Amino acid sequence: MPLLRDADLLGRWAAGTVAALERHRAEIDRINVFPVPDSDTGTNLLLTMRSAADALRRGRREGVPADDPASCAVALARGALVGARGNSGVLLSQVLRGFAEALADGEGPLVAGALDRADRLAAAAVARPREGTLLTVLSAAAKAAAGCSSDDDGEVASTAADAAYTALRETTGQLAELARAGVVDAGGLGLLVVLDALVEALTGVAPAARPQLPDRARGTAPAPRGRDALTTERESGSTDHEYEVMYLLEGSDDARVAELRGGLLAVGDSVAIVGDGTPGGTGLWNVHVHCTDIGAAIEAGIGAGRPRRITVMRFAEQGAPAGADPTGRFTRGRAVLFVTTGPGAAELARETGADVLEVSARHAVPAEEVAAALAGTRARHVAVLACDGELTAVAERAAATARESGQEVVVVPMTSVPQGLAALAVHDPDRRAGDDVVAMAEAAAGTRTGGLVVAESEALTFVGPCAPGEVLGLSEGEVVLIAPDLTVGALWLAHRMLTPGGELVTALLGAEADEELGTRLAEDLRRTHPEVDVAVFRGGQTDFPLVLGVE
Image (tube, rainbow, N blue to C red; front, side, top):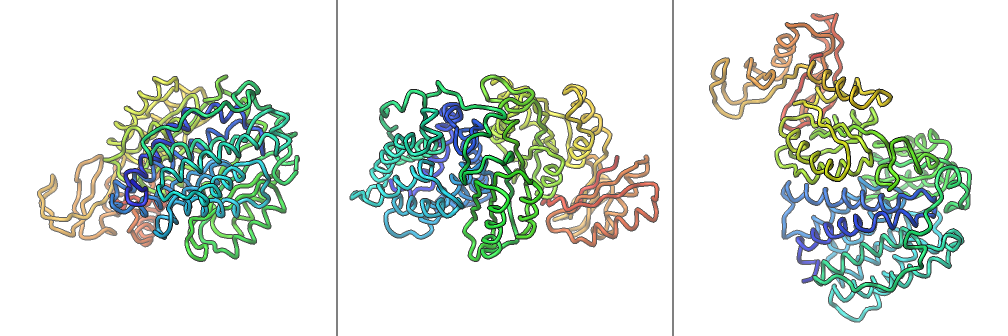
């Protein structure tokens, strides 16, 4: 059945690609010598595809119609864009965007049109492309698909995958780095895995085993690590840069992004910038660069818009950091995974250095989604801050799965975002892992939580009857007051929660709450409780207009 008319098939392709990349991740990582031999291309492709598949699942749960594959493809492509890791992940996001645009267009052969768009998008993303990379393999696949005489999507995809394999074998002789190592291009191999998964999703039959790739491409020649890894030629020919910088960019446009591309080329190389296709470039962009001056790369982004989710990796530290295992599965010793439904809270957690899983509906989050995020941290020991009773139960199930595969996972008990933020505030990566978990648990336990909700119907509460539109104040899960509006309710609830004492009040405004609600609360508390520090943030949660934490 054509992918164009079957959104479920799109989901099967995403799931099949994740599974295939999981099987081939180690092999792809081992042959990763270009543009930087940091042995992470397979991992980056897998994490990017997991992000895409997770976004597709969330979209389906939030009501994306099953009979609207174009919308499903948009969710898949955006998930890849937001979660793209490394240069290879950025380019994979453009492959998925090619399918999204072809489905939205709805004209002509789907697979051929999608690969043609993907080829053009990926080529435009890389400032200085080189022959013998993922781009070369993708171009060969797109040309083969365009020349296929069949109108069957499965046959077209199979033709494209075969051409990709042929082009992949030739990459060894197209780049000096690949020839010296005796390997094919790692990104190109990853793309072949993606295309083979597409063939299997469309035809129901796994592609036949292909002739063996060059022997050393099967993992007998591990990529150099550490400082030696910096001697290879980068995409622009530079050997001077030590860092990979990535961030998402909002509030920009095509003209400013073009200036950003030039600015990044002035400070680094391996520049790749991709967008979500919003007209005029006013949507979301993913920015990637290799550089030495981290500040200059970030400042260039600030000049072009609003950078967020900034990540920096030092190549010399990617080979064997503390806590890494010899298999390469764990690349760092410890991590903290913060799970939340509020985008504002998620950004606060990221600013502290935590890994973040932002979920859309706390009562419908599968344990597999949390398990994927645990694996994505690539840390041997992970402390999970789930920030909600329901999410904590899901995290416990995911942790059990992760422990079976050798990862050490501890779920810190808590029931609210303020407790999670309090735990993050005392997190110390230099402290023993066990002691750190105890400190975070104590901080969470020492934080009292309250919130406001607007009554939707008449009800009888512990403090009396309420009418629709009245505001209920909850503390530790129980209704403790009824107020006429949010402003009054916020003041009453804060004063009540401070009765036993407290040093810090944290207020998280909901997605629809006015800024004035937080401003008036802070002003009142600074006047009536001058001994208490007050911090107001935009939490972005949809279930409570206001959440309070008292420490």
